[in-house]
Each structure stands twice: as C-alpha cells, then as structure tokens.
Amino acid sequence: MKELIELDKKHFIHPTTSIMEQQEKGPKLIVEKGDGIYLTDKEGNAFIDAMSSLWNVNIGHGRKEIAEAAKEQMEQLAFNSTFSTFSNEPAIRLAKKIADLAPPSLNAVFFTSGGSESNDSAIKLIRHYWKIQGQPERNKIISLSRGYHGVTAGATSATGIPQFWDMAGHMLTGFAHAKTPYEIGTTASIQSIREVIEAEGPETVAAFMAEPVQGAGGVLIPPSDYFKEVRKLCDEYGILFMADEVITGFGRTGTMFGIENWAVEPDLMSFAKGVTSGYFPLGGVIVSDQIHEVLKEKSQGVLFHGFTYSGHATGAAVALKNIEILENEGLVENSRLMGEELLKGLQSIKEESVIVGDVRTVGLLGAIEFVQDPATNTRFSPDLKVTSRMIEALHERGVICRGVTYDGTDIVCFSPPLIINKEQIDTLIERLRQSVLAVQQELESQSVK
Ligand code: PMP
Image (tube, rainbow, N blue to C red; front, side, top):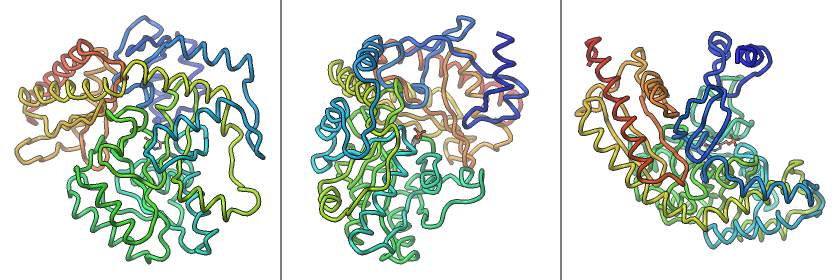
C-alpha cells in the first residue's frame, strides 16, 4: 500500500486534481474492485458509487457480459482503421443502433474516443457545414454559463466555467456565453442568448450548444419550457442547436436521451460516457438528416477530421452489448422510477434539516443544495467549506459523491448506476441523512448556523 501511494505521488499526474494535495496526502482511494453499485478499495472498504464514477457507469460495475463481448471482439478483430472508407461490422451496427435510439431526424454518427473529442468534432463539423455552404464567417459557438463541455481546446472554450479557460491562458476566439436558466429562468436566459447573438452579429453565429441538464455545473435542470424556446430562437436566427448528451445520454435522465424530457429535436447531439458505461472510451456526434444531406452534397474531397480510434471495433462491440443490457433490463425505466424514489428521499431530508435548499432529480441525475437560510436561499460563506465537509461525511459513511462549489454554491450531486434498486436508494438516503445532520450539528456548534 505504502509503495503504491509513493509511486502514485511520484509518477501519476491526476486529471482534475489538486497536484499539491496529492503530493501532501497521496491518492484518496486506490480502488481494487467494482461490483454493481459498489467500489471496494485495497483495504476491503466498500463504497456506494453514487456518481457512477464520472456519471458514466450506467449498467454498474463488474458486468461479465461486457468483458466477454470485448474478449470475443478482440479475438476476432480488436481494431482496424475506419479512415478512407475502411469499415467494420460492430461500428456499422452501432451507428445504426444509435440512429434508431436518437430522435427521428438524427441518423448519421461520427465516432470519437470520448466526450471532449465529440464536442470538438461537433464544433468542427458545424463550422464545416457552414463553410461548404459559402458562409465561412458563420463560425461562432454560443453556450451557457455553468455549462461543461470538456477539456479539449474547443470544448474548454465552450465550457462556461472560467477556471477551465484560465488553466492554460484563455478561451479561443469564436466562443461566447449566455446566462444559464439556473436562477434566472427561461425568459431571462433566452433573452441573454438573444443579446449575445445580436452582440456577436447574427450572421457570424454558427450554433448554440447546451447540456439538457448542466451536470458539472451542479445538476441544473432547466424549466420545462426552456428547450422549446431555445429551439424557436435558433430557428428564428437560422442557427444550429446542439445538445451535449455526454452525461444525459443512454438513460441517465429516465429517457434514452436527456433532450426528450423537453420534447425537442436538436440538429446535433454529442454523446460518450453511458454509451459504453465506461467499459471502453468511446463517444460520438449524431447529426440530423439535413446536415448529413449537406455533407453528402457539398463536402468535397477528404473530410480532414478523424481520430485513430473513431469507429473502434472493440469499443463498438462493448457499446452494443451495453445498450443491449440497458434495453433488456429496462434500465431507462428504472432510472425514471428510482429517480422518483431518490427525489422523495431528498425531500424528506430537506424537511428534517435546516440547511437544505433546493433538491431535484430528473431520472437518476439529482442534486441537493446547502444554504445558510432555506427561506431566503442565502448561501453559506465559501470559507465554511460546507460541500467538502459533506463529501467527507459521506465518504466516512461509505458513499462516493461529488460536490460543486463554483460561484459560491454548495451542491452535492447524485448519479448512481441505473441498476440501483429501492433498498439501495434507501441505504443511500439514510447515509446522506446522517451526513447532513452531522454537518449541520458541526455548523451549529461553531455558531455559524
Ligand atoms: N460534456 C459533458 C456534458 C460532460 O459532462 C463531460 C465530462 N464530464 C464532457 C463533455 C467531456 O467528456 P470527456 O471527459 O469524456 O472528454
């Protein structure tokens, strides 16, 4: 154990991590095994993986069927290039399957290795789409504050959390942000998008992109009329609407894709995470028939965009098996039903505690907010580190969760595997209740509550 900790500190630069904290404390957990909704560390301590690790292990850990599908495919054909029209059967079948699952007008898929690559691919495809139609100046991408789209250059710039731009300087030109509907609602957010389009020059705007539910921003669920209004606005200006379904795709929100909750069809959707439940790094972009028609007619010569692993045969076989499991086990429906149970549990904690603000779920994507005064929604001072205390209290009780403290909020997110059952939801809620009451007591004893 000691050796692994030292080797981790010496050789492993972790993603989205405080490097100083790692050097001081070593890795938080060295995970040894995954089984269902549980992760077990090297010392045998079991934790509920209430985040599906990174919102992605939708079918749960340790599924042997996936390992078998990968083994079978690797023995047959692990990988071949899909550049220059070379192809393979799993990638073809996966593209068809995703087209069948997506809204009716989206039927053609470009594959990548993950979410950020999917969003950068979408951005480049969108710019290409306008360029080949003689409008190269239409190249700007508008997205929302508190949105998260990944860490590659375009995706970072589309992300509406400035810390991600600051890490290596600044965002790229050609990106602008409007205000999220979180706190200000539909009308003001739509007005903000309109103002950004007008300020940038409507003839220079290529697309608006947004997550159906802002995940890393704190599970921020837009009002029920929001995306109808977004769609209307995009149509009014003749710009494309792209839904980033990286978290919300493949059952997470109780529907196959998140945007279905708003009954709207986007022009493009990016996806990753749940398409393989994390068993293989794979993502993609699905485009509308209209975009595909333009590409087929006007994209002359080679499309100079592609990843070595676009259309990976083993990845596609894993995704097909994962989707088969989602469908055969009714996990999209389970996500909806268990999401309702999770909400009931969160509401019961809100009733019992004096530091809980908003609680919300859509399918098995949920959040609980902590505030100094629920009546006025006054936030705690960031110095109190309420979210870190909460995450620590949960960890001590065997729950792995994720907090969001951006812009002074104290939000704890939930995104458990879609296989979770009622009894496991009850256990999760009970541990959360104990954690909330413990932190509340701690704050009261420090006279800050
Ligand atoms: N978009 C969204 C909505 C995400 O939540 C994420 C990852 N959390 C990404 C894009 C980036 O995906 P990846 O980390 O696979 O590149």
